Image 1 (cartoon, one colour):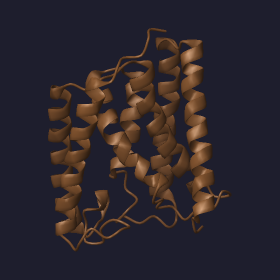
Image 2 (image 1 turned 30 degrees about the vertical axis):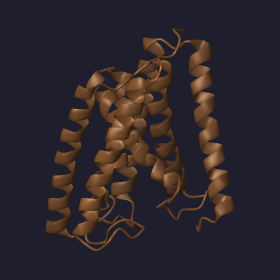
Image 3 (image 1 turned 180 degrees about the vertical axis):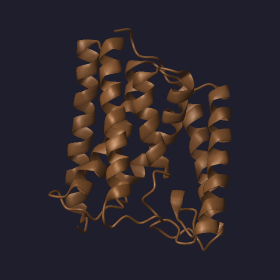
Image 4 (image 1 turned 90 degrees about the vertical axis):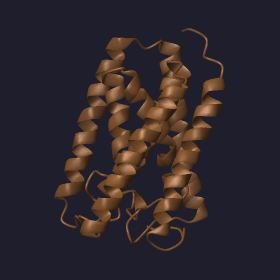
Length: 219
């Protein structure tokens, strides 16, 4: 399906409307650990199903469909951060989730609403942003300098790993392969360096602004 501006705005409006409804419900009902565990189990099962569906579908493409994209990892961090409220999981969710937001600007799916891929794509990306907002607005997560440094370290390891795998197998995970992102950032390998620089700039902005934000009032 070709995403015209009208279609894209409609999908964005529905997705962000559901995210807001999720956050307001969580705030109003004052969800505790039991609710988070139940939601975490559902999210983990959903993530596993999504990855199983992608790798077993007839038109599977090893160049793009293994669960190695940033959004795949971010979705895993989102699910596990509900199930296991460890700070390092919330840190990785916080710093990687904004990259999932690119899907709402330049979607990479061409599926129609009557196809499973359509729902997996949009529900997956909306869930990432929704759970990032949840840990920030509901649970009061605020990044520290140490969190920022941890995110840069993990991001660098991931970038180097994907750059090497893409070069060896002609893949395009994290869009640092020869094919590159769906928009021009220069030829390979230079667009990989641009993406790495953008990643660290986004991390820096998230840390500086996020650390200064006021914490939410207790529920």
